[in-house]
Amino acid sequence: MIFLRAASSVATQLRLGGERHVYLDFHYLRCALAELTFEDYRDSDNLVARLTLPNMHYPPERRVEVYAQAVRGLTALEPDPEKRLKYLDFIDIYAALDDNERKQYTQDYPDEAQTMSRFAERFREEGMQQGMQQGMQQGEARVLVRQLRLRFGELPEAAQARIAQANESTLLEWSERVLTATSLDEVLH
Image 1 (tube, one colour):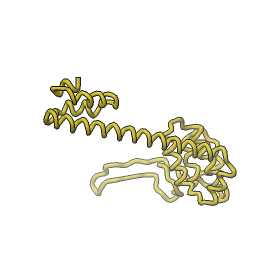
Image 2 (image 1 turned 135 degrees about the vertical axis):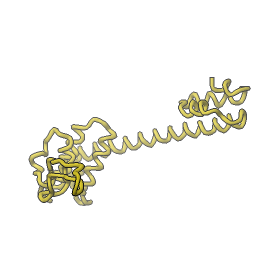
Image 3 (image 1 turned 90 degrees about the vertical axis):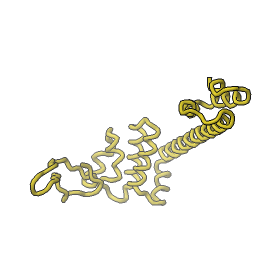
Image 4 (image 1 turned 180 degrees about the vertical axis):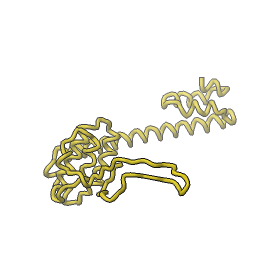
């Protein structure tokens, strides 16, 4: 069991049941991050250890260094951009740098600060573009469904499913066929 705060008084056994029956009874290993020393894990190759550096024990004046080591570990050990962004939020939350510390971080670690800032911006922009593309495609599908209903009546579920799964160029092609087709099959073939 991993505890974010000190947990020296926490039991290492869990027992659930009543007077007559015990339903669950086990012992677990206790790891209290606040009882671990930052120095022992600052250069670890273990991603979880690096991400949780802000929860470990260190002098308050080293908070910016701890944050920097966590971010360095993240960039070195996690290749997945989505996970990087999520884990960066985790580091930010637990490091809880104030405005002065953030300013100090960008001054003391300009390369890392700029890299993570560019990465986050690029990833968010890509996500926005992907979302806009998806929204446009869904809008085209809705217009096509509406045109087909006006022309041929209620649509079978199979036709609705094909439309929902179609890519943008196919949707445009089908939208053009609505104008001249005499049947639903003629549009969706």
